[in-house]
Image 1: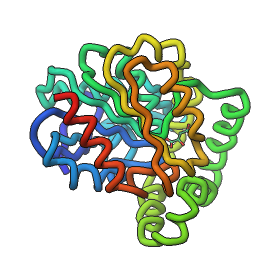
Image 2 (image 1 turned 45 degrees about the vertical axis):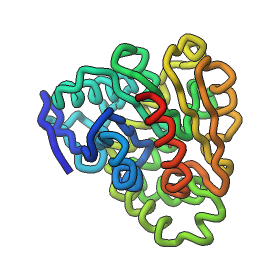
Image 3 (image 1 turned 60 degrees about the vertical axis):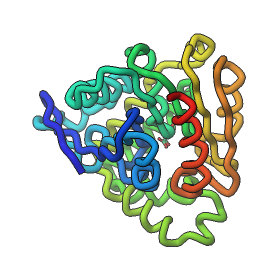
Image 4 (image 1 turned 45 degrees about the horizontal axis):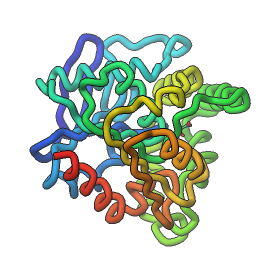
Length: 271
Ligand code: MLT
């Protein structure tokens, strides 16, 4: 693990391999550890940079915000990534890979810094913003996290995160994911939920994306169904869609070999 100190943020991140940088942005309520199979096995093809987002994993704020003021807008997360790249003196365009909420942040990053992106990988994510019903569910989840703690969020979310086959046959992986989720702070969970709730609709931007895009989805994803991936593929001009069998929302962990093979091919094709 490496660390850079910024104005109000101490960012923890992995930085493995050499060559073209690929920034991997984790989802909710997770941290950089979800990308272990990527930084361990793709570092021979690219420089994998996987940060913990603010209030997640080992990334901390120097001055904590009050909980009722904590909100992780996707633009704020994108700015944190830009600052990390600045601190690493990376000014040439990078590949950005976002999983779920990380994908929402990747859209914001591309909107704000189009010249800093040479390719996008959209993993288990969607372009549209929240429906009214989804916003209500976020508010309920914020209350649950504050009153009952992060464990209650994990208990309700974990069974829907993974494919039935993963749950049945990979108990060690399920335990690892549970641990990653349980290590989330209430600030992290609440900040993400508030930020996701107000995120912009990225659908109007899809047809204007001018770089190659790889869209990956797990066939058994119950959090973001596969048709959202198809919808992005239909609208993004230079996009490729890959659906992975026996994988749910965390397809990069559930089927790392297949996932890495497809991602490697995409990264190499951009060289
Ligand atoms: C995620 O996995 O990052 C979130 O579940 C996405 C969401 O809730 O919209």
